[in-house]
Structures are given as structure tokens and as C-alpha cells.
Image (cartoon, rainbow, N blue to C red; front, side, top):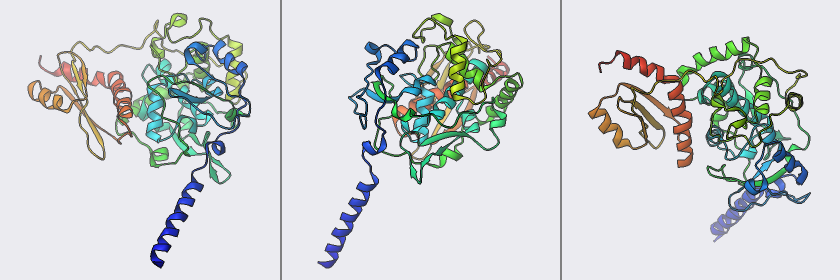
Length: 403
């Protein structure tokens, strides 16, 4: 009996410890200071769709924590000023899944780092955002509040040691007054952000030691391109200013990537008017240190000056296959008779047997936590890179193969 009583007490104590470890939403959030005028300002600036589309809701001043209905998400006002739009870009959603965090766990500077990287890849290199290149430059680190984890902005991106001097130069400011209080809710259309939970961000190996199992051979070439752009005078301030003036939200799903941007008629824009240079400079100087004049222009891509296109005429099928309990393993096989993306493993067997691969590459990725995340990783972080960076290699193989 004494043993049973001891076990009962032990279970009760553990329950109390768990309850203490799981704080309420009121403890995690700061009381809201957002006003209706602030959110209307986002709409006027073309950073947020009108209320009838985005269904934004501003809480009463001082509301301790958000409540959401189905299909809604709580956002911080300044997220939109540094490039967020909904639905969120697959690269951004893929990073959240890769790190195992929620959108509001990321610091404000982290949003801007990612937005600059996406626009830099698209508009200045002429490719989709490259996962391996991103991991080569950046790591995620816990931001503490005293000795405790932070819920809002508790995970912050920073450059890996020695890598900032190899990237386009910029230095973000350290603090932004009251940004964590400026929250409100909006509609979160599919594909939606990870659901909000009462959980602190928990660091893992991939935060600091993350390394892509694919695309590593492209990183060295891409870093050479980055160095050339840096040498030509490109800065992070210019990248930031470029997407501000064009009314592009890099962290949003967009009909056209920046290298196919159509100008004022681009369907991703919410307003026709460009942001004037003076206002763009004012915003950039709020976030980036030492910006007191307009940064110099550097060659960039858009619909009038697109990057060199890859010819798909001789390629037909791309098959992504393979799955194990510990690692996802994919084989990309290029064939001669059309272009098709499939996730069915049996296609790999039949197509390899009947047609024979012309070019083949094996890659491996750590398993994502959901099927949706798996699709993000498969299509966005793999196929676009293959299309833009590996296809020339495949074409060289094709040119040597008998027809």
C-alpha cells in the first residue's frame, strides 16, 4: 500500500511539474497595442489585402492574448513591412517545418533576413531561393528572456561564423520598440502556416548544424556569383529597397517570381503605385544600420530581362521516389519524351526498365513532420533547383547520348 501511495504522489507531482512547464497564452503574449489605423495603413501601402479579402481583425487595446477562429492566424504588424504576405511562400513554410517552429517564434529580423534572401536569389541571381545556399550562410539561435525561452521572437537567424563577409553586406538593427505588442488576426488561406500552439521554440541540431543533403555541389558556384554581386556593389539595403519599391512581398506565394516580375501590371501587386524612393529609404533605414542614402543600383532580372532559359525539349519525366522511416531518399530521372512530376515509386521501376535514365541524381533529406511539408520540400526546395541549376548538366549528358 505504501508503494502504491508513493507512486500516486509521484504521478501527482509530475502532473504539477508539467502544468508549471506549460504556461498559458496570457503568459506568452504581450497585451495588444494595435490600432485600426495601423492595419489600415498596411492596406493603403499595398502590404495587406483589403478587409473584405484578408478579413483582418484588430483586438481591443490591452487584450492579453489572441483568439482565432478556424482559418485565421495571428500576425505581427511589422511582419508585413519586412516582406510577409499570405499565403506564405513555400520556402518560408518549408523553413518553419525544417526548424520545427511556429511563425511567431521567429524574430522580426529573421523575417527580414529570409525576405532579403528570397528576393536576392530571384531578382539578382535569377533562381528560386536555394535551400543549401541559405543553410551555408545562416543558422538559427535561441533568443532568451533572462534565463527563459521567449515565445514571441524566441528564435533568431544569424550568420554562421565567417559567412557574413561572404554575403551581400548589411547589418540589421538590434531592437524595435513594442513590435511584439502589435498583433492582430487575418485570414490564413491554404497552404496555411503551421498551427499556433502554446509551446516555446525548442532548439535542435538543424538550427545550428543544418546542412542540405542536396544542392551542396551548387553552393560553391553560387557563392562565386554572390561574391561577384558583392564586388559589383550590391548590398542588403538595395535588395530590401528593391522589393519595397516594387511592392513585392518576398515571403508570399506569388504568381511570378521576381525574375519574371511584370512591373506595375504584375498580378502579385495590391496597388499600382510604386513606393517613392524617399519613403523606401526611410523604411530601409529603420531596419538596417548605416543607411543614410539611396544604395547603388545593380543589374537585376525581371520579365523584360529574364535569366537565360533552359531548354526542356529533349527532357520528359522527373520522378521523385523512395521513402524510409529515417530518411527520405529521392531519385531524379530525366527522360526524353515529355516532362512529368510524379511521387509514385512504381514509376521509377517501370520507367527505368523501359526507357533507361539519361541522367540520374540521388539526394537525401531528413524527414519532414507532415505530408504537406513533404510536398513543400519535394517541389520547392528540390525541383526548382534542379530545373534552374542542374538542367544544364543534364543537357550536356543528353548531347553526348545517342538519340
